[in-house]
Structure formats: structure tokens, C-alpha cells
Image (tube, rainbow, N blue to C red; front, side, top):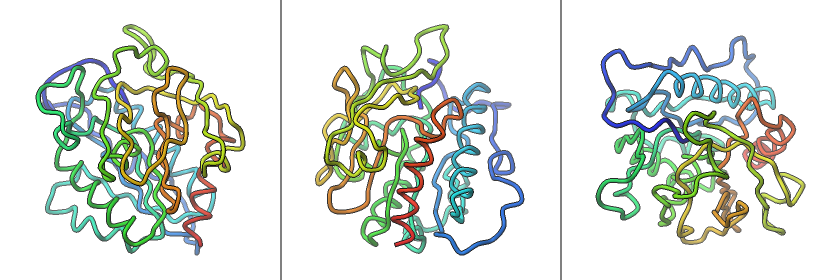
Amino acid sequence: MSAPRTTGGKLPGAPVVLRSEVEPEGVAAGDGPRIAVLVSLTFPNMTEEVADLVRRFTRTALTALTDLGARCELVETSTPLEDLGDPGRVAGYDGLFLLGGGDVDSALYGVVGPVPNSYGVDRRADEFALAAIRAAVDADRPVLGICRGSQLVNVAFGGTLVPDLEDHRLHRGGPGQPMFLDEKVTVVEGTRLAGLVQGPRLTVRSGHHQAVDRVGDGLVTAARADDGVVEATEHPDRWVVGVQWHPEDPAGSAAHRTRLFRGFLDACAR
């Protein structure tokens, strides 16, 4: 998720997103797969505009997953460190689902020094997420990452990121424009993602200023934007998929969201 250009840490009186604002109400207990949904609901530099996006996107994702039969448990990485517990506990779930948010700390993929338009960096949350991804992969649990989640998956496999896309026009709105826009991506034929989305050409919802650069060890590119930027990666032998776009954007295609999430949950059920 990209964000308005700003600097500094979390300020007193800054917006805070609560679990009660994103978790669906009245969800009956079932026997569907148990999914650890990892997200930082609140992060540094958050504006009210971004807080509203986090509320809407997270709630849409959780509602879509539960409507498909999943039993979701939020792993909230902006929780105080002493309450986070062991990231390896995600291996006890049937799958790991990672949502968007702030930028990944650039030092974790080898970039030292200031990053243009850096936003929402929380090193502690990054390290927890990376450990959780590795634990889930080691336990052969399916992993689906969205935007920041996709970037974290790539870093967890030793890959790098483009810290700031100089030509952002295909990927996010410009100054004074809505952050999110429709973007065309081409899915690589023969990939797992191609089978999930059922089409080589997609219109997706994007709002990002970073992207996968060097693809992580063992991962392959699964989709690209029209300017060549990597928009999705996956592991050919394990059920690990990362998409740079936001299928959980309520303004996007519900059919696409359902196909992608159902494929993930089917793998978790197996």
C-alpha cells in the first residue's frame, strides 16, 4: 500500500485502527481451514485517509474469507511486542494470509540510507512477519501475500525490492489524485496464479510505490505490469503466492477476489 508523502513517526493523536472495526460480526463457528491473517492495523505515519483504507480493505478480506468458510484469526503485528508471542505459532494454522500496509524496512533487503517516499516502516513488525512466513513455509502451509505481504514473501526468500518506483503512473495515483487506480497486468502462462485467476490479462486495483526487484530464491515471476514491473510471484513446488495488487479493495472485482481466495483456502483445506 502506498500513501501520502510524509515523514516522521507515529504522532500523538494519530489514527488508530481497532480490531472491532475490521472483524466481521456474527460469524458462526465452522470446520473450515484455520487461517492466520497477519496485518499491522496501525503503523507509523498513518493518516486518517490510510486508516480508513486499512479498515475497509481488512474488513473486506476477512469477510470474503469467512464467507468462503475460513476460520480467521487476526495476528495483529502493531500489538505490543510482549503480546505478539512466537511468530512460529502460525505453523499451527492451516494457512498464512498477509495483508498490505507500510513499507518494508529497506535494510532487510540490503538498501542502506534514506528511501524516497518511505512510509510506515516498522522493523519489529517486519521481522515478526518474515519469521512467520519462514515458519509457515517450513511447515508446508499455504501462504498468500497481498501488496506489502507479497513484498515480505519475496524478502523472506532472499529477494529484494524496488524502494521507490520512479515512474509510478501505472501503479498509483499522482499528487491530488486518489491513491488507488485500475492497473492492467499480464499473468504468466502455466503458473499457479494463471490457474487461479482464469485469464492471462487482469484489471486489478493498485496503489504502491514499491515492488519486487530481484525475485527471491526458489520463487518465479507470475505476473507483470505493462512497464515490466513484477506484479506477482509464486513458488512452483510449494503453495506460496504473492500479488502486488489489492484483491481486497471493495472497488475491485469481487469475482477475482473470490477465485483467488477460494484457491488459497482449497489448498489450506488439503
